[in-house]
Amino acid sequence: METVVGVLVFVVVLLGSIALHEVGHMVPAKRFGVRVSQYMVGFGPTLWSRTRGETEYGIKALPLGGYVRLIGMYPPDEAVGARAPRTWWQRLAADARAASAGEIRPGEDHRAFYRLSTPRKLVVMLGGPVMNLLIAVVLLLVAYVGIGMPVPGTTVESVSECIVAADAPAGTACAADDPPAPAAAAGVRPGDRLVSFDGVEVTSWAQVSALIRDAGDRTVPLVVERDGRQVDLTATPVVAERPVVDDDGFAVTDDAGEVLTREVGFLGLSPASVIQRQSVGEALSVAASGTWQTMQVVVTLPQRVVDLVTTTATGGERDQTSIVGPVGVGRFAGEIAAMDTEPVAVRAAGLLSTLAMLNLALFVFNLLPLPPLDGGHVVTALWEGARRQVARLRGTARPRPSDSARLVPLAYTVFVVLGGVGLLLVYLDIVDPVRIG
Image 1: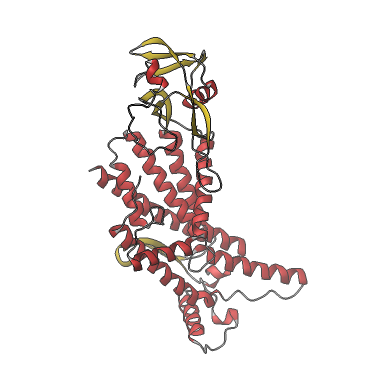
Image 2: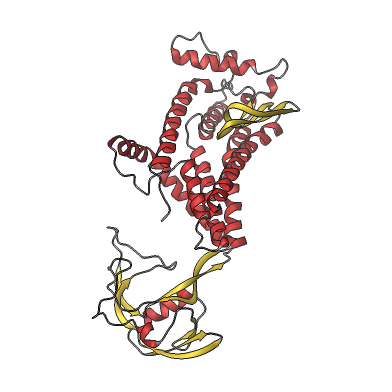
């Protein structure tokens, strides 16, 4: 049941993200006087639609995106001085200009999108991706600030029975000749709450970890709270080779990817997690970090797609760090919701964070400078604006509008390629899914 709920939440948020993305385009376009003839969520056959004012609002069968139809997206032939088409490329561009011009009613030429100034075009085109960014920030604020995230607390979850090597595989059993862990020898039990260590009051697990590491092999007093009363213990950490960790508690690796280790004090305790609300700054930092990581993935996207195609063609095993599509993200949402070993708050925060990362991906991906993506229109508007500024500085006549219809064949090509990649991801996410953990 939890899996179904997670998937349903994902679908609702995905459709909401698509709808709001298109609102980000539609609202400024209408504000600038452009007639918006259609606002659609999805592609394919129309399931429902209703006309309000001069705009038809509707839902289509395939929830794989959406669009708003702005009249006059492409300048007409006379505006760009187009000649009779001779090649198939020119014919596609001419057909696009004709279709765009056909949407302009008599006396409405001033309401065509191509008539907008460059700054206004940028506002309209960037409105969609920026909306996805805002959605991601809101979801992260709810997850991190409103609900909180699991962090190591000061309550002991488990006590090691013995001392094992730092590079030993997880779950390595204790051998008969392995020395007992200092925490076990001191009498620490799971469920104990650490009160003080070496005379220092304990407030966080990061502080405890640092105190233990710095203690070396000195015998120190340890106070724990057990069943509502404080218990005085004495512990003698041992000096053992352990991974170097950063301020966030993650292991530090060298250039070769190997975990760095050093000799530090070791007690043999593992903390239980607690839900702790984070600051607004932390949520915004996660949004910035997620955006940067997504940009790195997008830069390597062609190679990742080639790897996926090769894996599919050769029947190889899919890399668990490979890119996933909407079906894969929906599976993630279902798996997170089904983690019955985690508190509901942890699952809710994890689900919201996953959906936030999806919106960050939509934000970054739509900014790619390729038609028919928003970034392609942004580049076209910037080029047109740059030409106008150069003409103004030179004192020459204002140049004609950029013939953006000439990019239509490229837009079709990109659409087909992206559609093929999307179908491949859907196939792989079903038959060879990437799983959490």
